[in-house]
Length: 135
Image 1: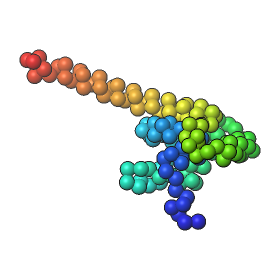
Image 2: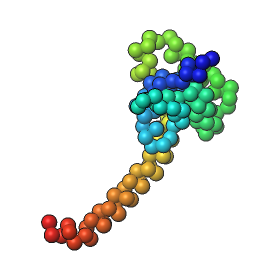
Image 3: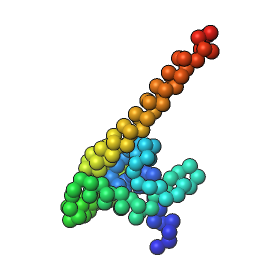
Image 4: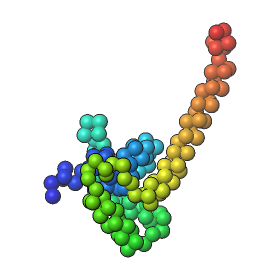
């Protein structure tokens, strides 16, 4: 198969995984989610193998067997194939939404605490700067 045919855009990758494009963007923002193989301009492109590895990791983290994983993924792809293209964007797999929310909160909380800590340090620094006292 031609290598670029195995690459998916952000919207297609979110559909393939079973989450909304907004959730995939949020995961990428906090440094979680599937690895983007390349950028095409401003758009991130994802390899199908990387998406499958990411989904497999989520199922392993939830301690779900490979047979159950295969059954759920087949059911998801069957549900997706039955819908027209414009309705697919709004649909998401409830299990994938739950496990990605957990990952988003875990990584996002860590990043959020760092931002708050640095903001507090800046506030302390600025409050002790004599230049600010003159204003």
